[in-house]
Length: 454
Image (cartoon, rainbow, N blue to C red; front, side):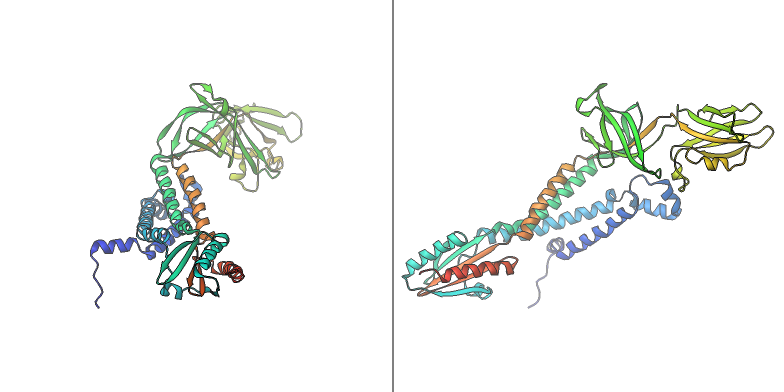
């Protein structure tokens, strides 16, 4: 017989119902997610940009690798995967519903032939009495049975956990809910950064697309502190923040602590501790000038960019400072300043001086040993700002997935038939999964049935 030809719509339907398509999409999503794990996402660090060629940077940018989870091709994969799940569920779910709501009450020969668990027993009581006792036995030891008479035999059928067959479809639904949450977050959410200097407030943040977004309230940084290890490496960043509505502090959000992995959430916006730094303007910096004789030390107070005369025709200019030099010189730590020293009639000399490494300052060999004591400059806290209205859908989807996986992997649909004929009965059993465990349960049931007085 020649195979029936499918029209284009039926072929398209078969394509989206295909398990091969499901496997292809799952593998594609897993492989492409590696890109988002390996490559920096969002604002690409300048040091990363400096390490790759201009051609790679252009290709990666055009393919959306730096914002991969919002790229058109990744979202397209999610849409196709969602469509595939919906089509598969629509095709298979009616059959499963019928299987659950219209179980095989009568055990015919073809069904009985496929069951490996069975037990034959004989009875001496009248068939009506035996049937009644067997129904009571099933009700007490397994589940309430349904009696069907057909062909001179009585079929007792009982089942447990029939709805566990829907577990896989609950998982399908949970994935769709999670995808819906992700799409809602992508379409209606926002993400960006904001820096707040200690004592100052902001009412906006800079979105990842370069747009300034209104918060709808004001956020003030009361204090920012950094604790370090003995090596000088940062140990913990901590911001003390206050939310203000119309200039008035919100009681529950006054002096709220924000550290890494412990954000602040208010009106749908979540603020994560991301970075920190020294505010560029307004701070005073303290330099020391110590003659090698050890007497007559001087202490200078300067702002960045300021030049002072040292009195002998020598000038000193404070070029720039940092509160952590490790990011530029990995083997050193602590605050440092870059200064420019120009002797009378000489050429300017530029070098760094360190607070935590005075021995390096002394190695320069000048008559004056320049040192840096630090600054009273205020710090700023760098916060990552996110607004994701789809996050509750994602949590709902995760909860559904846990329930669905529990039903799918830890529960099985168990069925037992007892076919009562003249002078004897035969018990059969079947489970949708974990046959070994159900075989033990069936053996226990069979042992009790053998001792039943019928």
